[in-house]
Image (cartoon, rainbow, N blue to C red; front, side, top):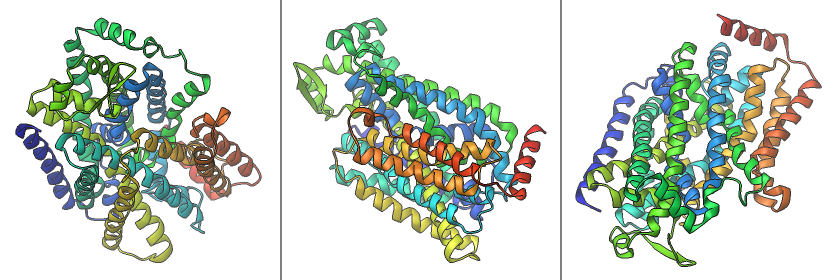
Length: 506
C-alpha cells in the first residue's frame, strides 16, 4: 500500500475515535447512551439509518454478487429500495409517537413490554434473546468484511486483520454510545454515498462508456445482462423479499425512535430513500463494470496491487468477487483518493457493526440486567454493563468470523431474515392493529425466529430454496393474528393505542 493511502486511512480512523470521545462527554444517562436523548435531526437520522443498514455488503457483498452472477442479483436492490421507502412511510412516524406515549420506551424489547403491559417480562426477555442471537451473526458479517478490507489493503493475515477491525469499532462504540454511533454513521453515510457514485463513473469512463461495458459483459456471459434469464420464480421472490426485513431491524427502527420530532419524518424519508436508491445502484454498476474491467487487465498489474485472480473457462476473474470495489480503489485512483475510498468501505462496515453492538449491549443492560437482576440499577451502572456487553458480543462475533471463507452476503442474509421474520409482523401489527395481544406477539416472535433457523439451517431443495424470511414472516403473521383473536387486550392497552392515534392526527 502507498504511504499516502495509509496516512489517509489512519486520519479517517482517528477522526472516528475523536467523535466517539466528544460524545463520551455528552452521554449522561441510559437514554443518551441507547437513544441519544431523542435529539437526532432528519439528516443525521436518515443517513445514520441508511449507513447502519447498508453494511459492508453494500460495497463488498452486493458488487461481488453482481460480478459473479450478473444482473439477476439486482432484484435484491429493487426489494430493498421499496422496503426502505415503506418503512419510512408507514413505520417511522407512528413508532416515534407510540414509543414516547408508551412510557418513553428506548429499545424494541422495552417498547413491546410497555405496549402490551407485560409485567412478566417474558416478552422483553424473548425479544432480547432473538436480538442477541441474530445480531451476533450480523456483527460477524461485518467483522468478515473488515478483515477482507484490511487483508487486501495492508497485506495482513486474515486473522490479524480481523482483530484490528474489531478493536477500532469497539473502541468508539464503547466511548460514545448512541450519539457517537449516529454521528459517525452520518459522516460515514456521506462517504459511502460519494464512493458509490464516483467509482462506477470512473470505471465506466476507463472502459469507454456504458455501451462498451455492456458489450464486454455480453461477450463474457450474455446471461449476465438479463435479470430474468435462468432465474426461477423462487429466486426472484427470495431477492425481492429482502424488502420485508426492514420492518423488523432493531438497529434501523431505533433511528425512528431517536428523531427529535415526528414532524422531521417527511424530510428524513426523502433523504434516506434517495441515499438508498443511488447507493444500491452504484453498487450494482460497480459489480457489473468490474466483470468487464478485470477480464481485460494485465495479470502483472493486478499482482502489483496484491489482487489475486484465477482463470475460469479461459476468463480472468477475481479469486474473491467481493473484493471488486477494493480492486477498483487501488487500480484507478491516486493513493490519497484510494485511501478515502478504502475508508468508505470501512465506513460501511463500522456504521453497521457499531449499531448492532449498541442495540445488543442495550438489550443486555436494559432487558436482562435491569429487568431481571437489578431493577433499581443506576443509569451509570447500566451504561457500564452495556459497555462490558459490547466487548463480550464483539469477541463472540469475531470467533464466528474466524473462517476466511465466510461470505459477507450469506451471514447478512441469515441475520436479516431472522429479524425481519421475528419482529417485522409484530412491529406492524403493534402500530396498526388495536386487537393484537401479548400472547399473540410472543407466539409470533418465537414462530418467526424458529422458522428462519429451521428453514435456513436444516431444509434445502425445492420450495425450501425460498429465502427463509418469506415463510418466517408469513407464519409469524398468521400465528400472531390467530392467537390474538382468541383473547382481548386490556382497556389500558386500547386506551394507549387510541392516544397514539390521536397524537398522530395533531
